[in-house]
Each structure stands twice: as C-alpha cells, then as structure tokens.
Length: 434
Image 1: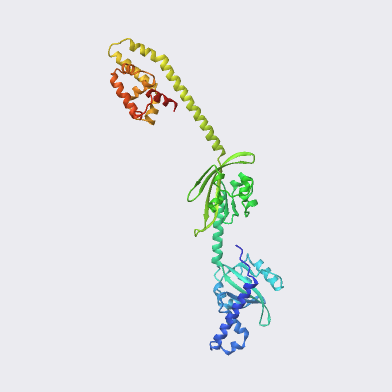
Image 2: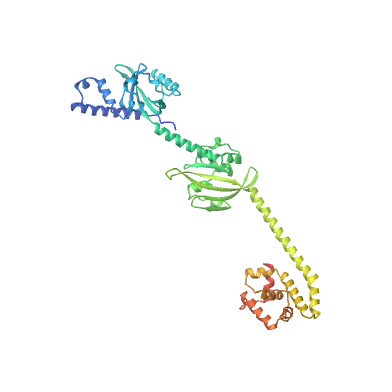
C-alpha cells in the first residue's frame, strides 16, 4: 500500500500544532519553569519546543544532523551526540539510500519532490525499521536546513505486508482452483479471474481485473446484466428466472444454466457465496462455474440406454411367458386331464401352480403398489387375471369353490375394491399396463 502524501493543508495543521506547543512552552516559561535566557534566544526556545512533540524530529544541515529530539533517539537507539556526529545516510538501509539521496538533492535544488515517503533505517542494534518522513526546507540559525518529521511505521508496515500476503495467498488459491472462478468487491469490480475462467472464456485476467458494470456477465451472456454472484451480494436482485434450476442456501447459491457460447450449446453449474473480512464484514462475492455439458450428455445417453434395457427386459419376459404358455402348459394340462393317481396328480398340480406363478410378474406390482397378499391369494389372483372361472381355479388348486370365493373377497378387500363396482379381473389385468 503506497502511503498517502501529506497535503499542504495537513502540513499547515502540523505547523499550527507547533505554534500551539510554542505557546504552551511560553506559558511554562512565564511560570518560571525555564530561564530568561530561553525567552531571549529563539533557537533555544525552538529546540525546547521540538523536544515535546510526538513525532521524531531532526534538523539536517551541511550533511549532518544539527538537532534531534527525544523521539528520534528512541526510534534509532543512538544518543543525540552519536546521531549528530555521523552522516544521516548511514542510518538509511542500503537498498533505500539511492532514492533518498536523490530526493534530498532535488529538494535542496528547489525541485518538486514528494512531501511524504516511507523507507527503512537500521537502528543501533542492527534492527530494520520502517519509517515515514516528511521534510520541509527551513532556515536554521540563519542558514538553509531541512526540518524532518519521522514516524515509526514498522508495525503498520508489517500489518500491511501480512494483509498483502494474505490477499496474495487467497489470489493464488483462487487461481489454481480447477473450476472457473472469479470474484468481485462490494462495488462490483472484478478482483479475481483465475486461469480456469481464462481458459473457459478466452479472456485474460489483466483484461478484466478492476472493471465493473457487469463485465463478467458480458463475457458469458454477451450483455451486461446481474447474474448469480450479484444475487449473493444483493439478495433483492431477481435472477432466478434466468436459470434452469436455482437453490438458495444460507451460505451459498446454486444454479444451473444453459447458454450458447462460442457457437456451441453449453450447460454451466454455478455456485456463488459472499466473501467477508476478519471482522465478518461483507467485502465482496465469489462465483465458481463448471462446464457440465459432457456430463449432461452422458446422463442423457445413459437414460436412453436404461430405457432400451428396460424394453429389452420386457421383451425377453414376454417371450419367456409366451414360451411357457405355448410350449409347456399345454402338456401340463394334458397330464392333469389324464386323471393321474396320487401322488403324481399332486406333483402335476404343484408344477402347474409354479408355472402360473412364473407367468404372473404383475403380482409384484400388485403386492408393492396396492395390497399384501398371502401366497395362496397370489395364486388365485394370477388365475383370475388369466380368465379362469371360480370352478376352474378350484380344480387347478384342488380346493373347494367356497374357499375360492373367500379368497376373491379377501383380494377385493385388500385392493379396496369391496365397495366399488369394479370387475376384479379387469382390475388385475390393468396392473400389467402400469
């Protein structure tokens, strides 16, 4: 962060402050705290006044310091005698000396130079400190000199560096995310545009960083308009109708959209959320986009494949049932009509019942969708569906007609048909069409 250059107004206020301190010092002197000599000597009075200001102050003249106050001693660690006996530039960090020397010479020549500039110094113990210096030309003891105000900004600089590193780390993380991602500040200016979104849009980050007025929407939709990231930042903005699907969570927004981009139809999955600072204040928003066109196409193909597989399954099932009816059951019926002796007749009846069960896959639909049937009720229902009369069913199952009537009543009751004028066989047959 570049320090703010002090304006003439700010410098004027500092001078007013110095005059105020002079007045306070004169008041102390009038009370007998200083000597009459100080009152009679303006230079001594000025020196005494400069000792009590909050900033470190020094006067530089003839390539050496002529005056340093207590705060300057505290910042540098050197005594006043040590500071005034060595060139000022010895304190400046070697990397900063060329710039500071050049500015000093320009100021002495009367050229315009910045009034405020930060740089580093090395204190008595070898510690590097960041300082901020404001200098003005003055007359000191009748000769030109430079009056400098110095502040220790080491902690401020460290905080700025930490913030800058944090912002750089965040930018690096965003930059290497696999999904196309961008971020905006609270004013809608683009502050991040990662590599993935560069690849998706063909727009380099340096072309859009700092731009506002929905520049990011222009990259996708060809027009400037609010999109999901704006909805995250300003919930009252209506954007839902622009998306195929829209989900609002307390922490983020999810949406899916289709658009024609660079001559092809694409489907994007979008996710947007707020960005907050360490104090929880909203400072912007971030949005990630993922091209799921291939995935959608794969899902469509999979659905077609599953549908075809279901049709194939039904076709195989129908052929299987048809083969049983035409190639197996006729011979079983002939065996039953042959009036076999026990237990052969029982075995034939069992075979016939099992075949009928295999031929009735609709029973699983009946059981799952409507009622819970007993095994015997399933047999009766299957035979009813196949068009057998009560007498025929009784003969097939080798039970009485009254028993078949009871099973029919139970089936109607469990299917909730006992109070409806619906033919039981028609109802059971309709299940095959569900």
